Structures are given as C-alpha cells and as structure tokens.
Length: 278
Length: 309
Image (cartoon, rainbow over all chains, first blue to last red; front, side):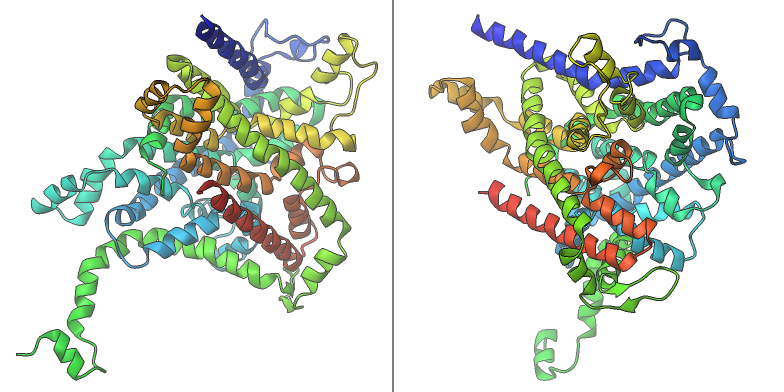
C-alpha cells in the first residue's frame, strides 16, 4: 500500500515539475500562431482562439533592413545543417572504425587530444580558428560553416564505444569471405550501429542548427547567414515585430524537437549499450 | 641464411625495408580511415588551440601583426582587471549552482523517471525537450520582463505578493538567480540521458539480491546499489556539466544583456568575448581562454579522481 502511494507521489511530483519544463515551450508554440489582437491581450491568455499563419507569412515575405528574405536564412540553415551532419556521420564513423576495431599506434594520442579539445569552449577556439579559416581562404563561403565543424570531439567516442560492441566474429567472417576494409566498414559495421548513428545525428543536428556564433564570425555576406543570426535582428525589431519573432522562435525550436521525437528511442538504447565504462 | 632480425643485429645502422612495408600493410588502412578526421581535427581544433596559447603572450589587434609581450597579459589579467574578478565570482556562483545542483537534479529526475516504468518515455521527452529547444530566450524574457506585462510580474502582482513590477533582469541581485534558473531548466541534456541509460543498465538481479540480503529502505538501495553501479555514467554526466557550467555565455548574454547592470551577469566567457570581439584584443582574450582551459581541465581531473575511487 505504501509502495502504491510512493508511486503516485512520484508521478505527481514529476508531472508538476514536468509542467514547469514544458509550459514555456508550449507557450512559445502557441504564441507563434496568435494573431496580434490575442498576442498582446492583457491580462495574458495562454491558449490561442483563432490560430493564424500570418506571422510565418510575414517572415517569408519581409525583407527587413537587408535585401535578404528570411526564407533564404531558413534555406541556409537547412542546407548547412544537413550537409554538415551527413559529412560528420561519414568522417567520424570512418575514424571510429579503426579506433574501435584495430589497435594501431597513435590511437591513445587521438583519444587524449579529443578529450582535451572537448574541454575548450567553442567561443574560445573561434578566434584563432577564424585566423586558420581566413588563411585557407574559406571566409565568406558555405564551406566555412561546414568544414571546421566536422571534427567535433565527443561524438566519435560514442561511435567508438558502440562499434566496440559489434562482435569481432562478424568482421572475421566477412574478411574470410574476401571483404576488404571498406566493405567491412560500410556493409557490415555501419548497418549494425544505426542507433549510435541516430544519436550522433540528433546531437550534431541540434548543435549546428542552433549555432549562431559561427555564421557571425565566418560569413560577411548576408545571403549566406543562417537562421540563428537573423533571430537577433528580428528581436531587435521590438514590439512591432513580436509576431514574426514568435514565429521565428518556433522555426528555430520545432525541427530540433521533431528530430528528437523521431529518433529518441535510438538515443537511449545507444547510451545504454555503449558501455561508457572506460 | 640469416633471418631479418639477426641481419639487423649484424648491421645495426640499416633499417630493414621489409618492416616498413609490413608496418603499412598492418596499419595503413587504419591510418587512411582516420585520416580525414585527424586532418580536420588538427587543422581546426588543435592548431587554433596552439595558436591561442601562443597569442596569449602577444598583443594582437587583428589589424597589425602580433607583438610579443611575454606575461604582460596574464599580469594585468590577475592584478589589474577588476571586471575579471567579478566575472570569476559570477561564473563560480553559476557553476556552483548549476554544477552540483544540476547534476543532482538530473540524477534525481532520471531516477524518479526510470522508476515509473513504461511511462518513462513521455517523461524523458518532456524533461529533455527544454535542453534542445533553441529559440526559447524570447519566451523567458517575456516571462521575466521587468514591466508589469512580464508574466512573472503579472502573476505575482495579481496574487498580491508584489505591489509593483520588479526588474528581474536588471537588478544585480536577481540577474544571476534568473540565469541559474533558466540554465537549470534547460540543463536536462546529454548528462541526463547518460544517467537514464546508466540507471537502465543496472541488472534487476542486483536489486533482488539486495532485497534478499534485507535492504531496509529505498534510500539504502539507492546508496549501496544504484550509485556504485552508475559510477561511469555519473562521471560522464559530471564532466559534461562542469565543462558546460564554466563555459556559460550565451544564456547569460541573452538574459542579462551587455553590459549587465554592475556586471552582475558577466561571466568569464563574456569577458573573453568582450575583449576578443568588441575590443579586438586577441592576445588578452587568449590569455583568458588559457586560464579558463587550465581551470576546467584541472577540475575535470579532480572529478575523475573523486568519482573513480
């Protein structure tokens, strides 16, 4: 009986605090669809009575102070994020393969460096990284938003741990049938680590989609900037642009939550099986 | 016919060509696989860090070539920079709360949620969502807005607790608590997931064995079974938390504004950003970066030692 009460108590506590977690998010979602007369209601009302898409339309068609429509920023964000995430999956899984399955001299160093790099705040590294990017002539191109982010630390750890779980026997069998390394990697190992790949996809997607720092530093041309950058311009528009600001916040937040919902069962299973024990 | 090994012994100065080829035959593929990653990592992560180290001993304003100044940056940073002291105090206050508190909270919620069985999936989503939601600053500013239209002010005033609107993000004594609250709200991130995974990885037999051995309460169960089994996951979560806490910047900037009243929302990275991107003093900001790096690194070492007993 006491156990039942503890159970209910737990649920009540979780739901109450869960409300604190979720309500601001819901509020933002709801606001994005409120017409202006409901937006500025006083006293404030939570739900929307007559939802509208006018703020989103406003976003698409407005041109702000610059000549670039917001839809361009959205495109940039989608393009850069999609390309970067795909490349990260390839490059980092390729690197994880020998790290997990083959003891070669130098893997210790890679681990240590990786861990150390992780502790360096991004903002900190951006200054000299800009100098490197500049020296390579990549400033003001899409590449500057893609290439520097490909060797992110930490993600490769997840992949290595998960790959370690793939039974050696499978690889042996494939090799005995004459498979070369690339075949083993792409046809045997990769399909087996889908949950880990999904996890890396989620985390890197979120990080890159929300990154407002890199575009400001590496890109001068307005037409190449991504969504987070434009957020501050829209917010700067004050009350007059509160509606589009809410719509923009929605655009920023919705994809990350959607992707997470779609792939979340992979995340938990990855973390569980990856045996983070070192 | 002498074997290759003894041949090398006879003529010690001569490298056996076979060994190099054998080396590449054994490891060549591995190096090729890691090559893209390693090259990118060296160019865009290692090189900038090294450059940063070097720059911290120079005066560099981007327009002119760097000028060597030795330890001058560090000297003025530690002895002459009042704002840096404030920034350290703020960051420590922030890290102290969001670090251990955030860690304990995420463990607490992970534990509570795991114990609900099937229902844990929607709960996990609800608790994890704030950490990935990107554009939330506008909402929080609405809630904590200093005029009477701010949601919090409205709730407090209509229930009689407040008489007039309170400037949550402008008053130096409340800015940091607000930032801490929002940070905690969005902190159920990767560390939280790691702890969820850790909790789920504990085999049920351990609990049954515990019951057989007569463990009295749930608290005992927690202390003697759950936590020891989760050490590696706890470590991962702790490391992530520490790094994130010490590197706080974006959230503080959005809420407190720049410059914040009496620098109450000024963190170490804010200070770094100020000197790097507003004043173009790359050398000085690199010095700040180095100090931060050493501190974070040292703290992580300490954590490791504490949690891998």
